[in-house]
Image: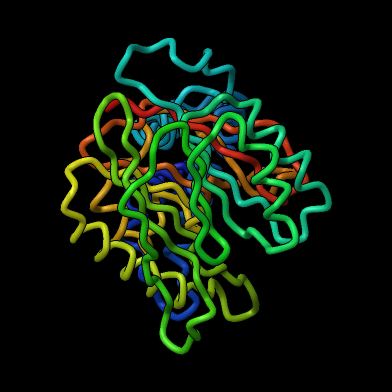
Length: 305
C-alpha cells in the first residue's frame, strides 16, 4: 500500500495535466493546490523508514523527486531583501486585492506605501474607500489611474491609459475590472495591465471556474495584441499559475522564478491567486507582505527589465 501510494502521488505531481477537466473541473482544482501534495511526502518517508523496506524506500523517492522538480527552485518563504538591491534594471511591483469590505482602507494604504514599491495595483476599490487610498499614496505616487474597481499607482508617469474589457458573457457594462497603462520608467516604457478575474466557487458540483476561464481568454487576447514589447500584468486572477484554466493567459507570460508567496486566504494562505506576470521582462522573485484589512495578502515582486 505504501509503494502504491508513493507511485500515485508521484504520478499526480508529474502528470497533473492529464487529469481530465470533467464537469466540476477536477484538474483545475488539483492544480490550484498542487504544491500542498508535498505535505504527504514526509509522511511517506517516515512510513518507509519504519517499515525498513527497500522497495518502499525507493518508491518514496519518486514523489520526492517529482516535487523537487516542480517546486524545488522555489525557496521557502522568507525575507526577500530590500528593494533596489539587484541592479539598476529592477523595479518592485505590489499587487493587492484590498477587499470591498475592508474595515481600514486608510491603514491598508499606509501599509502599501511603506512597501516602497514602484508600482501598486489594487482591486476591489469602492467609491467610499478610494479617497483613503488616493490620500495615503499621493506623496509617493504622483500618477495613478482608476477604472471601475481596479487601479494603478505609479512613481513614474502613466500614459496611454485605457480600460480593458474582460467581461464574461452575460455580464453588464457596469462590471469594469481591467485597465492598461504605459509606465514611463527610467528603464524604458512598460505596458502595465491590472485585472481582477471573476471569483471561483467550490461546491457540491466541484470547481466553478467557467466565468473566470472566459475572462482569462479575453485578457490573454488583449495581452497577445499588445504592441509594446514589455508587458507587466498585476492582478487577482483567482487562480494559480499551474491552473490550466488560466493557460490562455499564462502561456503568453512568464511566472516568477522563485517564491511561493501564498496570498489567499489571509488568515491561513493556501494558494497564490494574486499574480505578477511579465513578457520581455523577468519576475525574479515574489513574496507576500504582512496582512492588511483584506482577506488577501499583498504580494510584492521584483521585476528585471
